[in-house]
Each structure stands twice: as C-alpha cells, then as structure tokens.
Length: 424
Image (cartoon, rainbow, N blue to C red; front, side, top):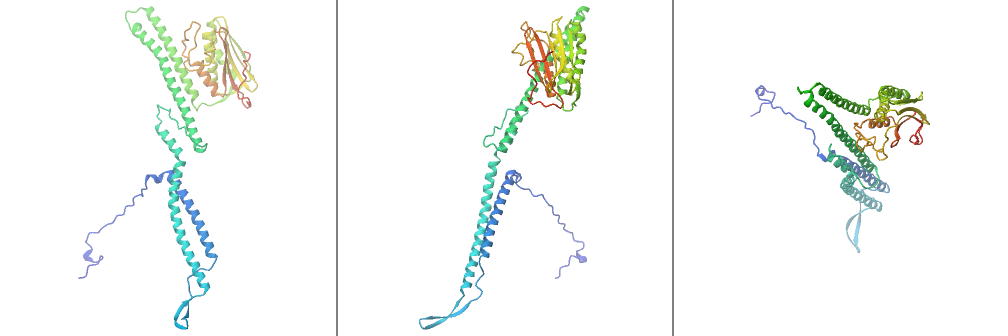
C-alpha cells in the first residue's frame, strides 16, 4: 500500500510538528575564568608552538637532506645454489634502497614528533598550572586579606615576603593604603567621640536650667536671668564647636577653590574682628603688616586661621598687655604671626597643642575649658596651603604662633621654612 505524501490532500489536516531549537549559552567551569587558567593556556600554548616549530624544522631539514620515497622499481634476478638454478628473486638498486631507508626514517620521525607534541602539551599544561599558581600566590594573599577587612577593623595587613618584585610592591602599596585608612578612621572615630563628649556638657547645662529654673513657676526673676545667662553661655559654646567642626569639614572638601590672597589683608580683617573684644578686655592690639604678600589659597580660611590665634590670645592674655600681629617675607616663604604676653605653654604640652580637643594645663594645675579645636583647625588650614606652623613659647613670657606659607613661583630647596622666629 502506498503511503500518502506530505503534500497530498489526505495529509493536509494532519497535525504539524514544530521543532524549536533553543541555543543555550555555553557554560564553562568557573576555573576557566581565572587569570591562572589564562596564564596556563598562554604558557602551554607558547611552549607547544615552540616545540612544534623545532620539530617541524628538524623534519624539513632531514627531508631535504636526501631523497626519500618507497621502492618503486623492482627487478628479477636468477638465484642459483651452487650450479643448480632455483628460481627468480626480486632485487632493487642501491639508490632505491637508500631512498626507502630515508622514507622509513621520516615516517618514524613523524610518529616520534606527534608523540613528543602530545607529551609536551600535557606536561606544559601541568607545569603552566603550577607555575602560574606560584606566580599568583601574592594575588591570592591580597584577595584573602581584602576579604577579611571590615569597616570596623582595618588591622589586617598582607605583609608579603619574598623577592622585591612588582607583586611585592603592590602588596606593600596596599599595606600602606590600609595604614592611612586605619589612621583616618581612627581619627574620625576619635573626633566623633570627642565632639560628642564636648556637646554633652552644654546640653546637660541647658537641660538642668530648663528643668530647675526656667520651667518652674516658683522661681523668681533673678533666678531666671541667671539661668538664661547660663543657657546663653552653653549655646554659645555649642555654636562655636559646631562652627569649628563645619570649618574643618569644609576645608577638607576637594571642591574648595584657591586663588591669589593678600596675606596682610586677611590678617587685617581678623584684627578688625577681634579689636572690640581686645579693647573691652584692656588689651592693646598692635599691627605690623607688610603689604604685597600674595599667597595662593582661600581668603576666608586664612582669615579664620589668624582669627583663631587671636581668639586664644585675647582669651588668655592678662589685661594691660599687648597682642602683636605681623606679616612679612623671609626668602621664598611668607609668614604671619600672632604674639601674646599670656601665661605661655609648658614644654611638654607644645607637641600636643595642635591636637583636636586637647586642652592646655593652666597655671592652677587645671585644664583650659575651651573646646580645643581652634589650633587644630589652624594647623589643618596651614598644611592644606602647603605651609607649616611653628610655636615659640616660654612659661610666664607668652607665646608666638608663626604661620609659614610658600611664596607663589619660588623654589624651596631646603624643603621647609626657616627655623628662627621672625621679628613680631
């Protein structure tokens, strides 16, 4: 019986089978995506190609050194045993025999070459895998250390040993970066802790006055005025602390643009700001500002640096004394200085006077009640301008703070400003 063809009418109503082919992405093992695998393939591929070129060259040299082909012509010769004829045997010429020997030699050489290439391919993969693993061992150490580092613990270090190569330099660079990050986070945590501690006291004063006096109906007018003055002092202290913190963060921001700044003009503005307070406290504010001192920086930041020094001088200098503000030039460095006749700073405290929230010891053995951010901000402003700050102080004779700034366009071969104190 004849089967109906697919195009016949009888098969037109039969269901059609649709074959859908889905192309799934080829999923390779995870190790094929590693640098170690790529280096292994690279090493083994180069070794395989080099071996193939050497063997190919040897084969071509041997082939061209003589004629090589199978025996193509055979001859018959009569064979005798004694005088008796025993039949015909096949013989060949000497040239044909030599060519046949060469042909077999080349065939053996081909088989040997294939075997060597196969062995080299396997051995090169194994050696490439081992050697690449040893070469990438420092990278694994770096990855392992990075995986163990947490935001709250930056104490992990790679501390890679071995030859001083590129990977050792990379590990040392990462360790140095971790040291800087650890120091920055430690300073940030310390700043937060100190700021929280400093804000706690004025907040407690405000809360105590509100609870005890200002919200109590039985308190008289004098008690309310006393409490209001205490709240005002506490809020002033908080405001000054917040402004100092804000100034620190603003100066650290990369968006702050620098321009030409008249150093004497910035110091003069700071003097004008604190002149009424100095007069109120019976202090003489003396200025000796040389004009034409142009530095590269931020005008407001430099004015604030001099203002912070004046704030400490006005606060600590005894009435009837003089506060001197001067600016000048020494070689390739510009300077501005503030000198007071206050109590001075102990030698042991001079190294720490620019630390955040550190308070100097007063003559009575106690601690200065100031927040302790002013001088830290001054140092930050000066160093961000590429300068340095120097302190000259003797107990009972006063203190002199000198801010050194590099003059624009001048070279600084010694790497730092003069060590001596300028005349203020």
